[in-house]
Image (cartoon, rainbow, N blue to C red; front, side, top):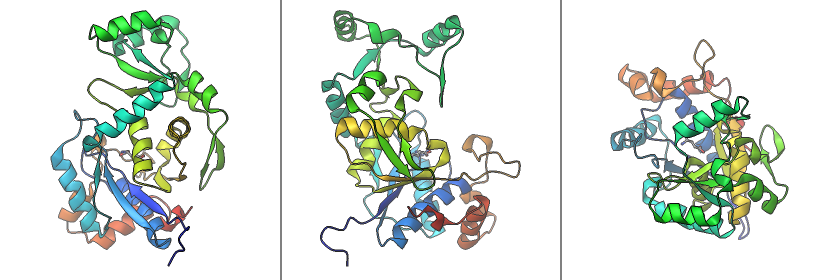
Amino acid sequence: MPGPFAISTVTRFAPSPTGHLHLGHAYSALVAEDAARRAGGRFLLRIEDIDRGRCRPAFETAILEDLAWLGLSWEEPVRRQSDAFADYAAALATLDGLGVLYPCFCTRKAIRAEIEAAGHAPHGPDGPLYPGTCRGLDADSRARRVTAGEPHALRLDVARAAALAGPLSWTDADAGPVAARPQMFGDVVLARKDTPGSYHLAVTVDDHLQEVTLVTRGQDLFHATHVHRLLQALLGLATPAYHHHPLVTDDAGRRLAKRDGAVTIRGLREAGRAPQDVRAMALAAAGGEASAAEG
Ligand code: GLU
C-alpha cells in the first residue's frame, strides 16, 4: 500500500471521436495503460470532443468498444470535454484577470492575406504565426467591438504571459529537462465562439482536473507541451511528467492518419484478428514496447 503522502501514477488516453481508432491509437492507449499498471496507478480515459463540428457520438461509442475489445480497462467516469465547458470558462476568466488574453477579430482569410502581404512570416510548429494584428487594439475599440457582438476569438498574448510566468521547464521521459519556449507558437487561440476552449486550454485544464501525473502521447504533440507548461504556470496548476512516445508509421514511414484511411482496429477485428494480435501489431509498428513509456 502506498503511504499517505505517496502520489500514485495517473495516466490517460485522450482520443478525439472524429473517426475510428487505428494502430497508432491502440499503441498510445497501451503505452498509457501499461505505465499506470506497472506503477500500480490509475488509467483514465478522456473523450476530446470539444470541436463539435468534427466529432460524432457514434465514433465515441466505437472508441469505447474498440478499447474494451483490445482488453483495456479504465477507471470510470470517462471525462468528456463537451460536458466541461464551465471548467474552460473558469480558466479563461483567470487568464483574463492576469491581462494575458485579448479578443481577436481577424478572420482566417484576413490573417492569410496579412501574412502573404508581409512576405516573410515567422513559422511555428503549426504553420505561420499570427501577425498580432489585434494585439495592439486599444481597450475602447476592443470593448466596443465585443459589445457590438462582433465575432472574435480569444488569443494569448504569449510575450506578456511568458514574461509574467518567468523561465519554465518540464521533463520528458526521453528528452529529459526541456526549457519551455511557448513563443514558438505565437499568440495561440484559447477560445472561439463555437469552441469555448482550444485544444491547448482544454488539455491543460483536463489533465489537472483528472489529476494526471504522467502525460503519455505521441511525439507529434511534443511542442504543444511548451504552451501547456506556460498555461499551467499562469493557472497555478501542477506540472505532470511527460512521455512523448514514437508514432506508428506505415510501410513507407508515413504517420498513420484517419483521413488517409489507415487500417482501423475495427477493420482488423472484422477481418478476424484476435485482440492480442492487434496489440502485438501496434507494439511492433511503433518499433518498441509499451513499457518504454515508464517515466
Ligand atoms: N486528442 C488528441 C488526439 O487525439 C490527444 C491529446 C493529448 O493526448 O494531449 O490526438
